[in-house]
Length: 501
Image: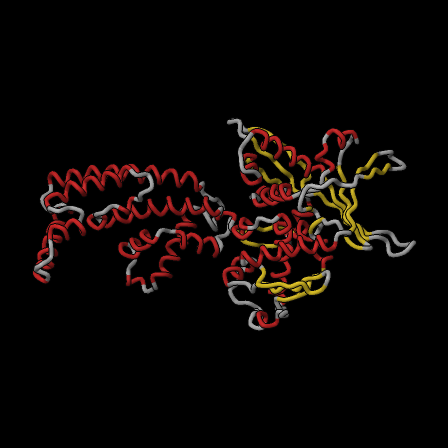
């Protein structure tokens, strides 16, 4: 089930053309409903999203199919209305154009009386488009033919909409709205408006800002003689993250150099997109099926064959990586603590009968359990899509997690974060402190410029930042926590507490 987020509802309403909204208020809204126009509109669009598109139900509708169906219906109806208009011009004395001519004739006469020196012919051409009102039928027929043949015009753009029967107007607006809402869902990916990612991908230093070579070491089991290939990334003096490359033959590491490269931004994009495609099968058997073409579109700018090959190669690479978070032993007698996990347990790539490539992926139990336990971080996808920096894309979920936790705990939205905090989220060369600080500062500056997460920040010491988070909006409270009221939203003093230079 895809929950209808307040963000998706708001984005849909604000994206509907004002002319359509005006028609809705004119022809569909009734004062007797006892609610404001804004409340009525919100409820009307909410019902469309649920009843037509399947939000808050067990089965989402195919919005592309709905869009195409209503586009065809709209174009057919426009042709039919054009035909009826031509018939009315020829056969019905009291047709919409004759009524319009009578209205204009009276208006022009009144203008002449009030302003005798007025050039009525020039004024008629300026206001109506014709010098002689008898030429108006020809002009209106030309305009309606253009409306009918133009793909982008709506059915409710018909010049004489008010002359149609109430039921015709309602159906015309329904057709237009179904097309428009489907288009909005596609444009803003509203079925995935709220991005949900597990803590494990945010708290563990899995990704680097660019593909870098891992420092591969080999270890041979004394009993089984089995070789293990791994890379250790030191998080602090007493803990590190081990990346284990699961290959049966060490020669593969030399044949496929990608296996010795860290997971980068493209790998992250792939993983996060795969996880966003969860459906019922994920919760029953940890399986997610994804269309390879959509993965290509998400990760690359073109649909070239080379990119399809690259995506499939990266999927297999992610599957071949295992991770082990290790806490070094505290004494000679103690044993080190560790946690083992993988992102993808298996990846099966195949083609359907139509030749379309797809991947069937089994997600690691560690992440599956975090979704079950709701150990996740939520953020709006449109915020993610606006971010460009590689470091920013990795840090955004970690900082969102900090922001959400302050909301839940009722703490102030301001704190100091040492460089070590960021080094736990993104792979860095720990020897290059100043360069790392600049990278983090660039990310913070991007968030501030985009008005995402951060209201302000400043360098607090040679190796830390003071960050002031943006308090949560009511929409975020509703979509991320199923509530509108905040526990203790300490937003008022925050702006003044940020340390000034």
